[in-house]
Amino acid sequence: MSPTRKARRTGRMRTNEEVKIINQGLEDEMEVWGYRPCWWKMILVGVGVICSGGLLLLLLYWLPEWGVKGTCTRTSLRDAHTLLLRTTEENLLMIWIHRPKLSYKTET
Image (tube, rainbow, N blue to C red; front, side):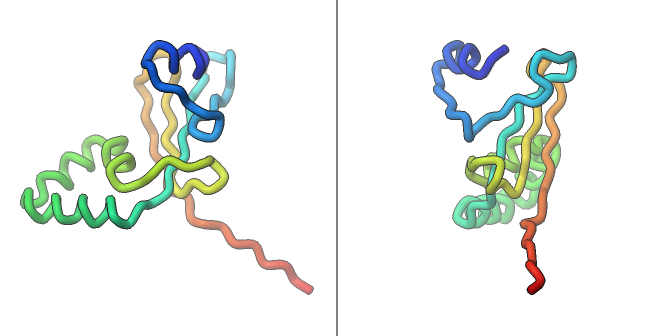
């Protein structure tokens, strides 16, 4: 299903920087979103973990998508620190990948 059809179905518009489709038209087609850490969200989640006695941390461990969305903000894939991948057909596979910030040094 294309992002525009899905946006019409859910009532939300998505820009090209928010979601990318990889392997489009193939059996293993996936949607990819990019996220970067947000310090104020991390602080709120930390306070919630302390107040809940660690139960919130256990919930975020079981549901990694909630953990990423609760501590990060959406960004372009180029600036992303964390990637969320999901199959477009069954919505079964959800993977989150942390990517270290790459820095390139040029030698003179």
